[in-house]
Length: 162
Image 1 (spheres, one colour):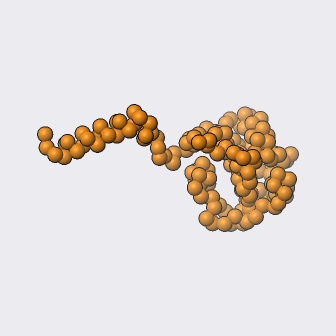
Image 2 (cartoon, helix red, strand yellow):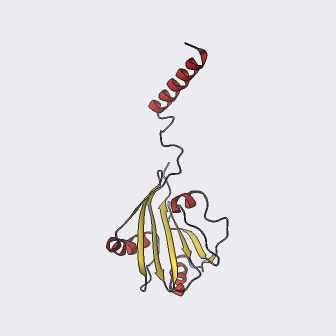
Image 3 (cartoon, rainbow, N blue to C red):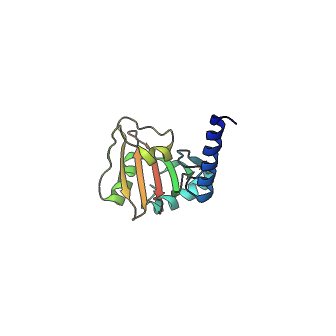
């Protein structure tokens, strides 16, 4: 046996030992996100409940409702709710929940976990939004397009407990 094979065997043995002892997980680190879209009828039923969990109320005139339940690392209750509503109603939804108006989004946002959970989501010129803590462990992020009616995207998730 040559030296390179010995090194490969030693590294393989070390990796196996780390996996068995829990020091290394086969899915860590990962940025893969799995989204499961709900059928339209189920999305319309689930959206008010999911938004209420995020401290928000679905505007009465909301249409084109879509919901994705997202599996992302060890975060829990990750959901993305999208809908179309009059822009003023979307802004009021945020103001009622946070006590402040949404602000124009900056190019560097979203990033980190938010970007990975949202996947191919991109900011648009004139898009407004807000980030707020629902409670100690839950966060919601709202994005409102500049159009009227506006397309609204709400990301809601619970922070992993460690």
